[in-house]
Length: 244
Length: 312
Image 1: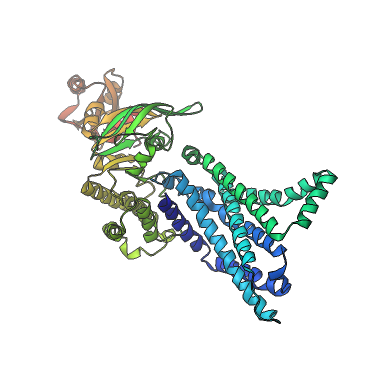
Image 2 (image 1 turned 90 degrees about the vertical axis):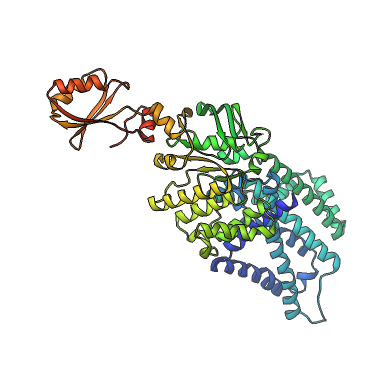
């Protein structure tokens, strides 16, 4: 099973790199790395390493990136007429699905992990008045962990949407809508809460340590990841995919 | 492996009110090339999808290599190779990577992978261009590569859905020859769908003709010609006037009559009715020199089943 997942991920990875291997693709990746790895740290200075919100930025950032990649998972195969041949192979359903998720996660999370040390180098070159600046071990674990969980969330959502989308464009549109909803729903829910409840929530977050919030967020993301992957597996039906 | 590679009993698949495949019962012997002929939309692709377990039958059952397609579809797919309606190749990848991927899918040992890919690409004359992305290739080359992919893991059974469709006659003939050699070398059973009747006649051991989802006839090309071909005769002689032709057309035993290159081509309604018709010709003043029975083609059989006249 692991071997089959890895086989699918191998091909997805090859396709991802060949897609982004053109001049525009390379330029896009370069601009992204320059913005997140150089421009933002240079502008924000020490806050890029020390401010508590940076942890949440790294959790949000892969979500933005992953949707652009993952829409292609099934809708792209359908457009390129490669899906039916893949479905007619000996690969189990879960290997096809998880292989696509793994490839996207490794690609996006890898890009995120490259931007982290790049940011550190930038900070140390531009704002190193008092010696070497580094993330603390706990911050590093939080950044890596949250960004991984967020990438899995984005990837699982993308695969789920892509399963039924008629084209990559439709999948991308649907994913943009979902991203908007995911971004605004917590705010709307918070606004809709009765005033005493809102006060309680605010008190909790004001009083909580950053590590408590990270653990809470990580638990929430992990639960969402597992739920979405299970739903995607449930919706993966070869006959539906062939007829779609 | 069972001696029968494919066995279906009353296999039926409906989509709403449309019946794509209706009550299909057939057997395909292992090690043979079976041609499934029909017009576009006749039910050929749906049949392949049913046999691969990609679609569930609405009624009936199918067994492929001894495995039930309903409950053991994964085992069926484990033992088969496919070239479906589209080549299914990743166009962004090179030919080499495409075959590498499917070699990994079929778990070919690493030591064997390289040799097998080289063997197939060499035989199909694609080796020199293995590092080019498939998107740069012609349709003929892609189809060849897709055939290589289908045979890569030496499956006992391959499904080929219109493998020469859209190819020019030279490329189609080359692919057909390659396919026949590759399949026979490995002793593979081939289930081939096509609407190219000449192609089916050349490479198939047995043929099934499907129309509107129903299997209309099955047998070797020779059996089909004998059972369903017409009993046309070519009459060489002089004096085939319009009046004589009109006389024959009005005769109840005549299905068709036409002048071809100065000869008369006559098709009686039933075999054995030629002599009385020749007598009529002679009685009308025609000088009959020779009467030759004409060999039916698979095209004649196909059109007689569909109840249509072949295009001139």
